[in-house]
Structure formats: C-alpha cells, structure tokens
Length: 496
Image 1 (tube, rainbow, N blue to C red):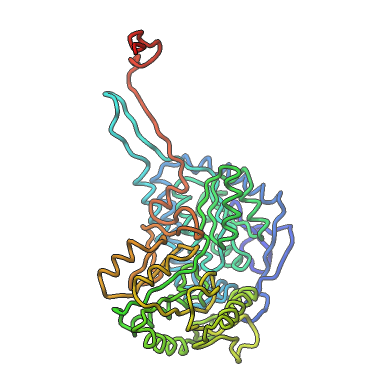
Image 2 (image 1 turned 180 degrees about the vertical axis):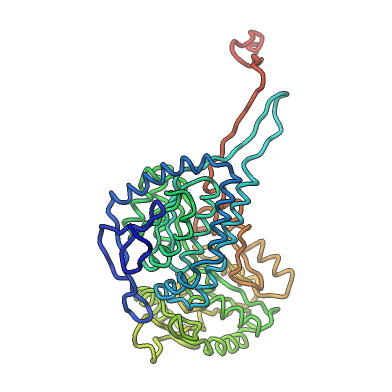
C-alpha cells in the first residue's frame, strides 16, 4: 500500500494506491519512444475484490442526502481547481503527446463539471404529476443504479472521464474507472482528488481490452459508459444487451464542416486550422471532411494551406502546436488513408509525410488533401489524425446532402453569415451536435453525443445525469378505499 508512483504498476481502490500482481508493461512517450513509467493488467480476482468493495461503499453513499453528497463533490471540485494540475498535465503530455498547454487546458475544465452535477442532482430528484383520482399522490423519483464502469479513451483522459463520473457520483453511484493503456499514469495520478470521498466510492483499474471486457460482463457492474472506436462500441453494446445492462456509448465520428460562400475566408481558414488539427486531429469531433462552395473553394484552400504550413511540429513541451500521434498504429492508419486517397485522385496540398527533423517518435505533418471527391474512402472512415480532406461542392444544398451521407453522426460545423443557412443546418444535419461559426465548443449543461454509428445515449446536461439513475413511478393513496373497478364485476357490465 502506497502513494502514487509512476514507476510502479498500480491501481487505485479504497482511497489507496496498490501494486498490481498481474502483468506489467512500459508506458511509452510517443515523442521520444522512451519509457516514462509502468502500467499493469490485473487478474480477475483483483478486479472482483475492487468491485465488491465498491458495492459495499455504494450502499452508504446512496443513503446520504443530496445536499451532503453535493457538498462532498464541491470539495472534490475545489481540489481539482487548485491541486495537481501541473503534475497531471506533465504526465498527460508525456503519455499522450499533446502539447502541454492543451493538457493544462483540459484540466482547467474539470471542476465545473463536478460543481454542475452536484447542484443538478440536488435540485432534481423527481417530479409530481397531476393525479388521475382525487386524493391520489403520484410521482416519479430517481434512484442510483449501483456501480458504474467508465471505460475512457486516451485523447481526453480526464475530461471525458469527468463527463460521466461526475454525473454518476452525483446520482449516488460508486464508479470504476478503466483508463486507456496510453493514458494510465495521468489518470491514476488524478485519482488523488477523490481521496476526500468515502473509501471505495471511486476506483481506478488500469489494464487492457480484456480488463474492459471483464467490467462490461461483470454482474457487479450496473451501467457502462464507454468512449472509443465505433467498432468497439458495437461490441460493448452487444455485451450489455445480452444482460439488459444500460450503457452510454460514444463511438467516434467523421465530422464534416461546410464553408459557405457567405463565410469570411480568413476566418474560415483560422477556424478549420484549429478544428481539424487540435490535438493532432485525435479528437472524436475533429473536422475531417470539408465541403467548400465552388465560388470560394480556391481562395479558401490557399488561405487554409498557408495557415497549416505555419503550424509547428514538436514534442509536447516545446513551442509547437502539433505533437506526435499517440501510437505507431494510428500513424500507420493515417498513412494508409492518405496513400489510398492519392491513388484515387486526391492531391496533397501540404504535408503528407513524416517531418524530416523528427526521425524519432510517431510524428506526422499536418496534412491537407484537395481534389477530393465524396466517394473516396478517406471521406468514409474516421481519420483520427492530423489530416483533413477538402471537397468542392456546387452549392449549400449539395454540402448538406454530403454531410448527411455518412454512417457517423457525431457533430458537424457550418461557417456562414447567412441566417437562413445557419437555421437549415441546425434543422437538417443528421448528427448530435451542430456548431455554427464556433467549432468544438461544449457546455456542461447541454447534451454531448451522436447518432448512427457515433453512439447511443448522451453525456453532460440532464440527459447525462439520467443515464446513471433509475426512474421509479410511485402511486400513494392516503386512504384505503375499495375502488369501483375492482373485482367482482357488476353483472350489468356484461350486457352487450
């Protein structure tokens, strides 16, 4: 039993760090390919012990009144605003490769989520309906689900975790966090913020795909929250369905963006440079396919490429905007998609390869493809890298049509000064989120999620809280009255 130590393969349970007895692996810095710590894969018995402890702890946590729970979560949020930010950010940059300012920026957005859900759960515990009979009291109330599992990706390991963990804790559940293999250390370090909560309420179990599968299948887990690839999300959905287990699934996307002929070109180029290349494009809501109206296409591509070429590539601690990709496999997939697009007729407007000065690490140049057509493979798959494809379209109608011709439906962006186009986009785009002139922004109080293969359910907002609560309908009659519709039936009712 010890404090957090990145040099040891650990888990977090009962407010303590414990060394894992399972297999051990190095955590690799994608910029230097050097080991920065250790992570482990637990045995099934270790996982079961943590889950059993969580179930016991949840029984007491759920009995606390919402005001007391809220006060404890506010205390946690206060800690998140003032402690560990640089330590966790440093680990996140070393593991994931994101620029250090982006790691710090991620952590700056966590506390408000816990504050929001602490108050939302305190102010919304159910509702009273108008009764169907005099003297009858009918209402709905919310109960905790029990123990919830949160399988978190590497790109925003703390923020995406907070989306669902804060809601689940506020609802009265205990939570089990399974971080990505890529972001184990920063997630474990962050667990120190939860040590003020009752022992066993928050646990973190690192591991691999088998660990996540064990949690999904376990009868000790009552709800699953998963963020990752669409393919894995489908497997999680199937496994949960077999046990009638609720789940919240976010399966990525292939988000489109429309550049209208009513958009300011310099503004559009600046907006897309950020929405396409933030975190090296490794965001589920990154802009991956751009539809530009023909009359402004060439001017936009010229301005866009100029901005992209000014982006600096480097490790997360240097003065750079584009860090390494998080895995060698991800970079290989990006290279495959670019090569395929070029073979189909696309042109590389800028980038397209590994930077010459970066012969160590999984770096890749920010890349813009032009002369792309809607039927190309690169327009169908999730890129998840520093690459964006630009497609020329004749008008706004065609742009909307092509945006919707995707098996994904997470988010979509539109850059326009035309109110009619903005309203049409909000109504007609087949996705869970629409950004008009301000891509990638979210809001703790509004739902985050998608349609189609991009997922099921919603995080954030009241929808995010309800995902971790069971609703119960109650009828209460203050008097014991024999009702006129009870047995036996009056003989006259049988007259036909």
